[in-house]
Length: 232
Ligand SMILES: N[C@@H](CCC(=O)N[C@@H](CS)C(=O)NCC(=O)O)C(=O)O
Image 1 (cartoon, rainbow, N blue to C red):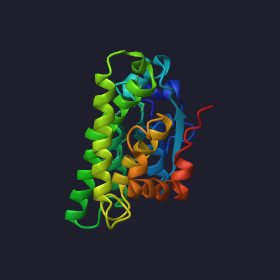
Image 2 (image 1 turned 90 degrees about the vertical axis):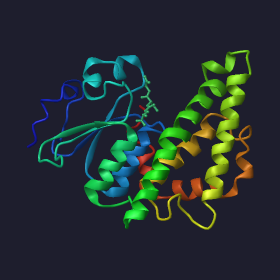
Image 3 (image 1 turned 60 degrees about the vertical axis):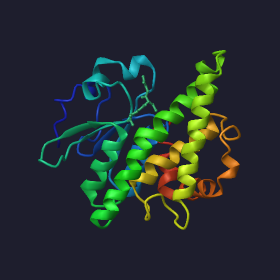
């Protein structure tokens, strides 16, 4: 049995089965990337609910695994060097899991480069921009009188949607075959619904993106991963 006692996070969120990947997460667009990937790849894992409250993400135990106080994070007891490895940042986790299994990251070197390109597009563009849109359009920032931040992120989200729409011409998935880039991107497109920002970003004018999210959500592993860990 793997010994995970070197990871202080296991004191607050103990592993029932330390031989499988430990996932520390919450079902947000970033969190579900990890659970969907684990489900799609058929990797055994144990999920621990870490809420976004400071009590959880800013606890010393969680910070010991991710000093950046954000979910998701994982521990793989069977790391590549034969020792356990801890990881944070959803993009890094997706790449790690794809490399571990040799799946969902492109067949050829060029395919692989394209997958990483679209993964980075999500990590550096869609994620941060849509996240700010959520803040300024739905959450606390929506009370700010100055319309400029709201308009900035609405326009940027609409622009990014246009990029996705164009990229999906003639293909079902963002990098060609289904990949970790889709696992990163589709949950964030879906978040526009939660933000109540579909109309304002012109969602209905992006039929390929609409069909893409539907196609993604219909996958059995996605359906399961979207609800892990359960909110309550
Ligand atoms: N770049 C990070 C972002 C993760 C992130 O923003 N996580 C949010 C939930 S979606 C979070 O944990 N927020 C808690 C906080 O910032 O205190 C990743 O992709 O893993």
